[in-house]
Length: 149
Image 1 (cartoon, rainbow, N blue to C red):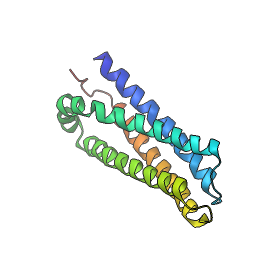
Image 2: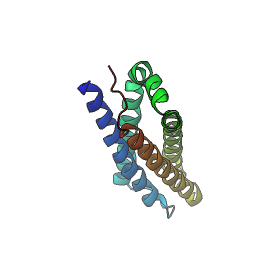
Image 3: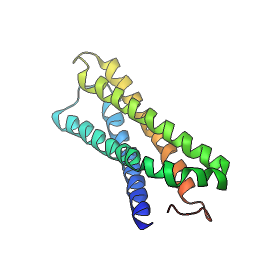
Image 4: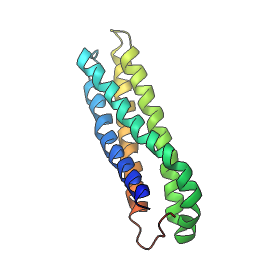
């Protein structure tokens, strides 16, 4: 099904963009200085890109569960488990990004340490997002795996 491949590819593209987007606030907040108005917009854009990647994944999950999951586990159990791990790590990315955004945007002006912790949260989210993207690319690149019907 070509629509499945298109949605899967767009989901992956947003995942790669989310890695870059999550790194940006980590860099901006590393010194602990308050964010400028432009930087606040950047954090908002980070949320939008991350939400797009995650939201599209949630949107295609039902079709994956219905048409792909059983076949994936039958084809290669380890790949199925890696894909399940990818899904759980994606939740961790979202939670770390939300925590980083809240800490970075709502920290009192004199609270450098909270903004530095926000930077660590964004950096952790970016690192986990790399793992999520890598696992997704690996599983989707398996040869011989039956296409969803």
